Image 1: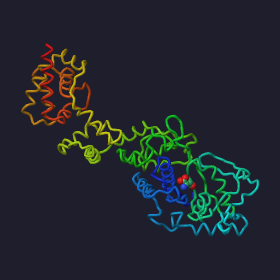
Image 2: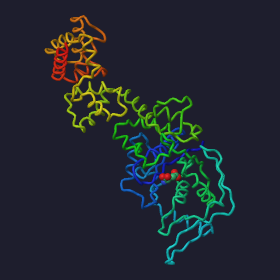
Image 3: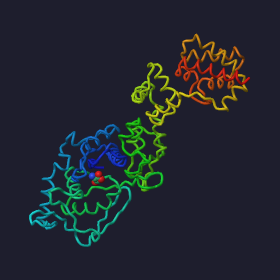
Image 4: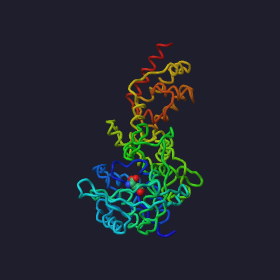
Length: 447
Ligand code: GLU
């Protein structure tokens, strides 16, 4: 393949959306796989829709995802400027060329001064192109009316500016969303009018929600902005991995892949023709896999701000590490640690009748008493607690479920949970002793 140049061309109309992130990511993968250039160009000609900070948000979220680019408004490059509103004289010049060649005409406004420039669509011509995703597509010029190249305010329309830029920026492949398929014949007309080489086009399928409806920004059931995932504590590597599977899959259908593996195995021939399903559960699964694989110190560093924001008192660095450690395998996203913490440190201590029945049937009072006595003088470290549970077992000649479950129920109130010694160390001596006493009193009342 000749030197590949692809681009992601967002309009700065808001935050980076999952659909746009996918367009950017697939272009990035295409460029990196083929050793080409990845360019970011800002298409800001729809002035009324531009939002302040839109460009920065696009770029900062892309780089958070782990993308980097060769040319862009912030980085520059030899094909700049990379913002369309800074290229108005370029579009003007090419529009005039079409006027001179009789391929476009002026359409005057009522004031007799201002005019738009319309493209003169050739009669009865077929536009055929081989789409990288969909194969051959064919459109007739009969279905396209003369369309506006330049508005009367001197700003080009998308379909005109995109061709001028893609040509001048030497773009070889245009990968974008399916909603642009019907724009493609208009763009081909412009390439032909100038006698320019037409790039290859590839239109990626829509992304649908779990009800097979096109993902819409108004759909409140699906979180759709990259910044929101970032704020919740999704990991960029996991997002990168997940988004790469929205309409593409590697030959072995493996689901957890590093960036390098994805770049290496990326194959545009494997872009799916079927809509890509945005599966929230799969995203949670992928993210949890990445969380599990993090070194504990890294995860502690990432989790700490969430706990601090939730005004949870961090008792010590050691305590924090224990806390994060017991939940590492249970988090779908790091911010979830706050809910897990609250579920674990619930204020109320009530035993279900099932749990209480267990204590009664297993003669747990003596176990709890022995354990309580050992704990009173202990340093309350998890390792010590573990030994003391064993010692209690020896003292009372119990082991296995009657021993461990009795202690768990009487101290946490739950019949299931994370590592018992660590749980108790986290709950702390005062609370554990108090709960043991409460439970013993209740048991005595029963006998
Ligand atoms: N600005 C267009 C969009 O955001 C770009 C389309 C294209 O890639 O040609 O949809």
